[in-house]
Figure 1 (tube, rainbow, N blue to C red):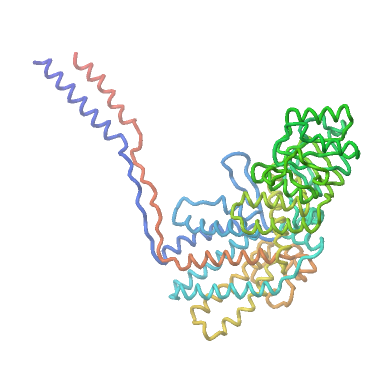
Figure 2: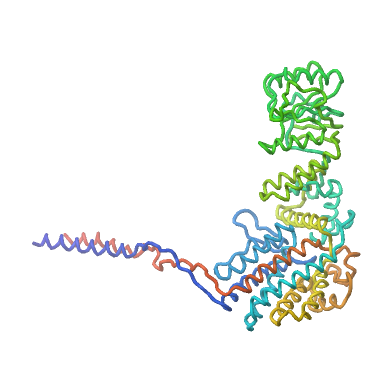
Length: 585
């Protein structure tokens, strides 16, 4: 009897312990719900996010703008003055607040993609338009009419900016644009101007990390591609490990060269005329390669074989570009031309060839100038039509090889952090310079927007505009003074006073924050590309008006975590089972 009671007691205690353990285990989590906010509350939450992001970004504006240090998940912290880099790093835990920040991030990213610079200006303009828009709507204005007023004002300001634009001519002007975008560092401006002068506006300028304390500029004129000689037996200069020819013939083959007999006729022609031969093909292999090497070593024939750059259709396009540049006919079975039927008239010519193990440079091709211009125009047309960033990049490279050249700027510095910070400024300056060459320049330092906003007086006097629309016009007018205000504020002076002085002045007179005086902005070299100012205002007003007319917000609620969590400490009571076992004896 006692044995049965003891057994039932143990079973009861075990069941109770099992229930306790089950209660402590977390329940299956369900998807969290969503929260809806309306009207003033929704806009107020977004404005908090916009304000916080803009406060972090605005400190970088102007020649006396400060740095922002960014914590990174890996590697050393990053220090930068680049507005879009700061904006990309900002994300808030509160999803409602983060919505506002995310929309401003999208403005900065879009401006950066389109103009390459002006991201800080776009951010502060967005904040200004949205903040005043929120006040207007809260005061009872019709959001749609306010938006129409803002859109009309932005259109008028952009038209005025276009009228003010001055075409960029000369190295000095390019250097000034680059210097302003690089936060006033003249060394950056001068180096970029020198690079652009050497490779022309169609050339490719690439920015790389250097390995010294100083900035370096390496320019290559002519066509350069990243393929070297197939075999080191083709080297003509043992000291530099290069193969160099002058007044060379060029054979372009869209396919593999595998039989020596196919190219014997061409080699014979070159040998008789003492002319070096450069063969560019998909590949040169087996018997053909052996034949070229033997003739080079024993017969003293000047020859070099190089693989064509790129893959697939891109390789064919590169070969066709080379054919236009050198005056050669591309040997391709697709075009009905076989390699064994090639004669001397199908060869191209270049004044100089330089081949290393990594790359090849063709200088002064004998191609028809009109044919080269037509090819360049064709590539430009394709760039405008293409949507893919990858294809656009490849087309830009092809355009540079045909029309300009390649310049590589290597950034110097005493630490990785310094090189990274200067590289950001070099990239901004390069983008601003290209934008200036494209659409022209206007006075910098926020002066252009202030002058252009004077045209809004006509809209305010327009009888067809109701009161709410005029409020929208005034919002844009006030926003146009924001960049000038913040540049002065970052320079340590009263922003409102400087804005008043600039507004009272005429023409190109504005505030030189670097030297703390009023100057003629064009003479002082303080200039902005029209494209940068235009894109910043357009993108800022577009997103700000969308946020202003927002009446409801739907956000994901944070997932609720079990307060007990996975704390298994309470299960220590199960240890009592051993104690219970002891009581059974």
